[in-house]
Each structure stands twice: as structure tokens, then as C-alpha cells.
Amino acid sequence: SFWSSSCASSNKERTLAIVKPDGLLGNYTDDIKKTIIEYGFSIAEEKLVQLDEDNVRRFYAEHSSKSFFSNLVTYMTSGPVLVMVLEKESAIADWRALMGPTDANKAKATHPHSIRAMCGRDMEKNCVHGSDSPKSAQREISFFFGEVSTDKVTEHDEL
Ligand code: IDP
Image 1: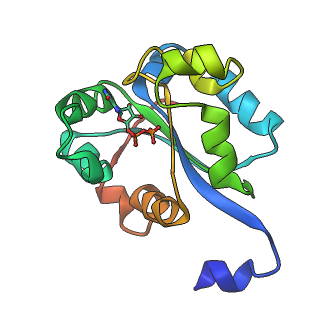
Image 2: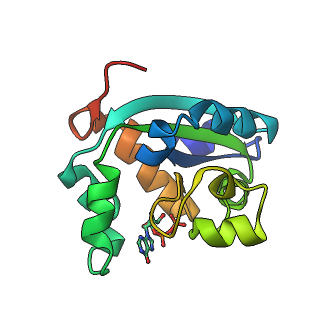
């Protein structure tokens, strides 16, 4: 593939990060981006999008049978999100570590310097997303930035 052939000599890895609607509404975007840069990531791509129900159902398909799924759809469509491709060595694991645990209350207790401790509220409203494996990262990056992605999500006008 293009990626493996053009980057064979680089250890850089890409992951998908999302600042969720609570992060944008709470004006945490600048602090989150500052932290991302401080920790050595580069932001390779970014766009502000308004997800619709269908986008979220497909993005989070693995959670479709969970009890919290309909709340997750409501939450993720409640406002625009900032989607970014982050790049660095070990980007996937390092971004997960920087986000902190899924439950923002746990993050505040055990990972006080994590992003979810800084701007999350609870198990659901946890401010940020990060891919959990190389396979997810590839799927999620092409979901938002692949060749056909422009019909899948609606770009938001004002950034
Ligand atoms: P992750 O975002 O830390 O990878 P996942 O288990 O993949 O966590 O869950 C996806 C998202 O679904 C979470 O970030 C959170 O917003 C929401 N979520 C997960 N578990 C719960 C729950 O038990 N109640 C409400 N929302 C949840």
C-alpha cells in the first residue's frame, strides 16, 4: 500500500482522535491541541464535522448491542466534533494513555494529568476519542478522511 511503501523507513504511526461535542462546547479544543503538540504528536489532518445518527451508528457499530448505545448516538450528534489524525511513533497507544480511562471520574482519581481528567465528566461524556488498535485506526481514519468520506459526514462551516 501507499502507507507501508512510502513510510517503510519511518516508525511513525497514525491514530484517529476526536474532540467530542462536550469538548468543543466546553471550549477545551485549544488546551487539548496544546497538550497533543506538547506530547510530541503532529496533527496530520483535521476537520470539524457535524455527525448524524447514521454516521455514529456506523462509527460505533461494535457497540450497537450495548445498553448505552442510544445515549451514545444522542451525545455524539449533540454538536460538532473535531476529528484529527495524530502522528508520532506509537501514536495509538500514546494517545490512549494521554486520554486516560474511559470513565472521566476514574481519570480524575487515578490519571489526574490525562485529558479526560481535565475535561471529561463521567463514563459517557469523556471529551475525547482515540482508536484502540492499528486495525481500528485504519478503519476510523478512512471513515473520516478516505476518498469517499465527504459524503459520509457533513463538514461544519465555521471553525
Ligand atoms: P473508549 O472511548 O475509552 O475506547 P469504549 O468502551 O470504546 O471506550 O466506548 C465508546 C464510548 O461510549 C465511550 O468513550 C463513552 O463515550 C461511551 N460509553 C462507554 N461505556 C459507557 C457506559 O457504560 N455508559 C455510557 N456511555 C459509555
